[in-house]
Image (cartoon, rainbow over all chains, first blue to last red; front, side, top):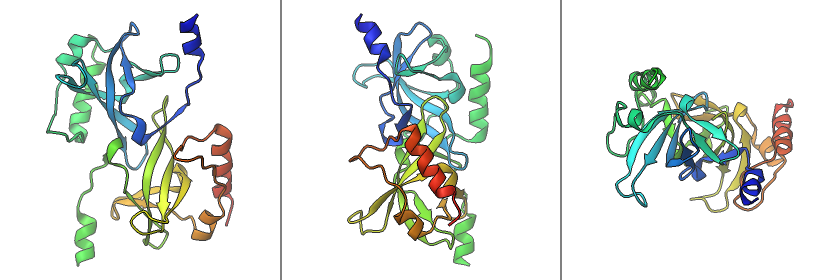
Length: 121
Length: 121
């Protein structure tokens, strides 16, 4: 009963840019695997192009940061979070372009990342 | 000369959701009239639907908050900010749906706002 109640609570279809951090990320089995740290938006189009996510760790300690192309995240209105079919192993082997706290990738890096996740696993 | 130098500095085409606040907003004559407080994004599509902006005031004191539909803002790569052709008078007379610090509008409110700004002024 409780579960049915939770999933029927209407979630607002919009989110404010300063309230994005902490949104849950779920795997294909609806298990929460991480949270969103920030979204990265194209200035001209106003479209989100990828998300910077934190996986694992405890209270942010020891968590891994991964950059996930937007097309790999699907908002689930029942879970109130983003679902991805990316497997843990695939995440761990993904190309990383980290440079401190800077999340802005070049066009080439974005392309590499998208291609990596589009290949069958 | 200085102006030419400024406009040739390449600005990154992407912006992080937690670095949006403070982005400049310019009027049709390239005069800065305000700043962006936050963008509001559709969770499913990942598209920005409107911006909450602060106009006037000094260091945030006495500034007015206005909600501007995304289609009225155009990123200008030379100015490193968003341009709008909305006139000051038009902004002042716009329908407002404020409820404290909450920026999430209903579908009906969004429609009202879009219609208002699309009418010829």
